Structures are given as structure tokens and as C-alpha cells.
Length: 79
Image 1 (cartoon, rainbow, N blue to C red):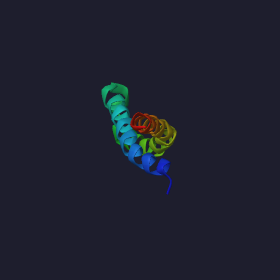
Image 2: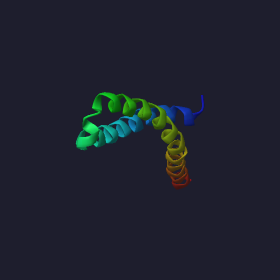
Image 3: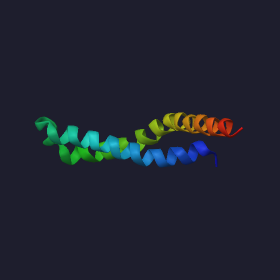
Image 4: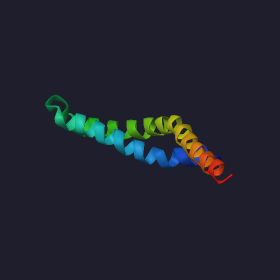
């Protein structure tokens, strides 16, 4: 597998949890939404599992580019 896929898998775990946290706080802190929490919290969970990997897919190349730049600088410093 490509490095982008590995990075995406690792990032998707974090992005899903952050998205769930934001959604859960939004649902539970608004009184009108907290009445519907039985329905809305599973929706937030499903949405975080769907949207999280998509966000991670777009973030992965940026993280890899930083690593490449740092690695290239280290190689240039040795020469």
C-alpha cells in the first residue's frame, strides 16, 4: 500500500474522534438538540465515520511533504 493510505488510516482515527467530539458537544449543549439526543448522537457518530476519512485523505499529503522537506534538509546538511 502507498504511504498516503497508511497516513490516512492513522489520521482518520483522530479526525473521527475530533468530529464526534465537536458534534456531541453541539448536540448536548444546545437545549433544543439535547431533547433529540437519542436520534442525533447516532447520526453524529455515523457522520464522523463518513467524513473523517475524507478529511484525513486530504491532510495526508501535507504531512508527508513536511517529512520529505525535513529529510531532504538532513541529507543536504550531511553532504
